[in-house]
Image 1 (cartoon, rainbow over the protein chains, first blue to last red):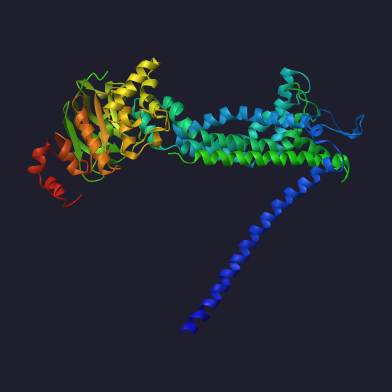
Image 2: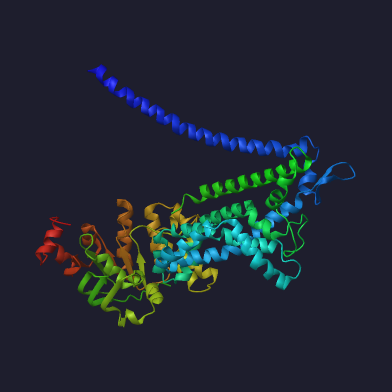
Amino acid sequence: MAKGEEKALRPKRAIERRGLAITGACVLLVAVLVLTLIFMVASRGLATFTTDGTPFASFMTGTTWNPHQNDANGIPLVGALPMIAGSFSVTLLSCLIALPFALGSAIFVVEVNPTFGTRVFQPLTELLVGIPSVVFGLVGLRIIVPWTRSWAGGTGYGILSGSIVLAFMILPTVTSLSIDAIRAVPQSYRDGSYGLGCTRWQTIAHVVLPSASSGILTAVILGMTRAFGEALAVQMVVGNAAQIPTSLTTPAATLTSVITTSMGNEAMGTVYNDVLWSLALVLLIMSLVFILIIHIIGRKGAPRG
Amino acid sequence: MMAGHSTSMGVEDVNLYYGDFHALKDITLDMPANQITALIGPSGCGKSTLLRCLDRMNDRVQGCRVEGRITLGDEDIKDIDPYDLRRRVGMVFQHPNPFPLTIYENVVYGLRRQGRRPKSELDGVVESTLRRVGLWDEVKDKLKASGLSLSGGQQQRLCIARALAVDPEVLLMDEPTSALDPISTSLVEELASELAHDHTVVIVTHNMQQAARISNQTAFFYLGELVEVGPTAELFVRPKKKQTEDYLTGRFG
């Protein structure tokens, strides 16, 4: 009897073990991929400072980007500050442009007309997510760049055009996460406010939005992560001039736009190639910082309600 | 600031529909000033629905239609701006729902939304209302702490203070103790009796002992109809209708 039971169990145990092995291997593979990716970008990116002898400070604060040449001291001209400034400018500005629209439509969808919101508006924004970035870039080239040129003069390429294109791209992300955040505010808060004779807008401004603020902040930072990392659409409209941006409407460059423009043209192992990896490393670290911030907000915002 | 201007409420031939569902049928009921009216009955009998008609909270429910006349004093509440009405007819909910704000800001929330007021006035209201609900000694040293940091019973008393701060004439309580422990429950019950000195109190309750303990008048609802209403002592001792007796003796409900 006992022997028979053991026999019946054996194939089940084998299936259990096989399942564990297969799923475990998937986890391991993903973990290894992520770690090797970070290691690869880091090792190549650090070569600029270790083998090519560029001081870290002159990379982070230098304002001249001309990696083919050396300065008087024989140090390559690889100042990344223009691109770092460019990336942060388009990121912040695009969020500033997108946030009012995202927040406004999120409030409309949750508080004003939920039926229209879920039936029409949300599918529409999801459509926006699926549009490839090159299409956004093209629209930017055809419409936004000429528009900027029409009133600001110059070429029309620059941080403003890049930010507007990015704002369109991050709008669905920020909107749908803001909708989730506002929807998660307990109905009892609204009842409490209405019960005291407050109007809808007082309730939204003083109870709903403050309660949803950590979720909305998460939405903004996820939008920033996306804006910071977007390459193609920005490259098409930002002007690609590696200089410290002096105005929003003069050509500039971002970390991503310089990498995409130059990576294919520079041979492995050259200073130019190494320093592009350094730019990628800066991008990677910034993305990690964004994700870290989201986790911190999530943990602080969690014990509510 | 507690003016003590209590006003009676009345409903006359009120019918309420949620879409096609007829939730309240020909309800007529007087809720006299300075008294506690208890609404009892099994779940889904319409007692909470009726309560929410009194301050027009049902206006916010899609597909909800109210017919008939509801009065606050001599006024038809249809003629009162709903926001003014809800200031005059305060509500305490089933689950304590303080805002995620400080204790102080919870109390003055309604006042602040009515316009700017000097800080001294707000301070006075905070102290007097918190004293009134018996919370002052417990929280006076932590008015800047979050309202959510209080215990359930304290939160409910904070919600009552919040409702009192806008000086309502009527106080509606929707099963205010169903989420509370026995000690907090008795504190809230005492408070309700005390508040009836200068307010009209209408309380929905599942707890028949509670209705018996604190109310002056009890109305028994069943399937959207008002089966019987009368002075509490009379209704509990000598119910006139069979359904009331069955419910009170626990044969259903």
